[in-house]
Length: 132
Image (spheres, rainbow, N blue to C red):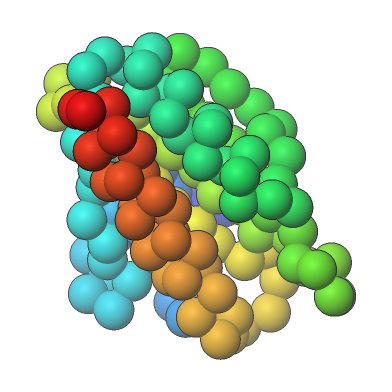
């Protein structure tokens, strides 16, 4: 499988490269692995949550969206580096898989992991608010 792609192929997002500037829920590289997130009620509600959180995070633009996929580009404030963040809404498991990777460079100083940890925290808070 070609490792330099965006989108979903054979039910998975692209693998992370060997460089430390990527995190994913679909990786076998332990240092880059993060936990997928559960759907909120329905896929449509889940997509609404994802897009709402992305908008609040700032410096982001949705570049592609399908029924089960969202591709977002985040741009760093000072140097204008671009990172690709992808969300795959897997109907069969009821889970959101994601991948966040720098387009350039080797190290990202943990930016992609921090972004997705923040996203996950906001997502869990969104779920709690929906329950109330």
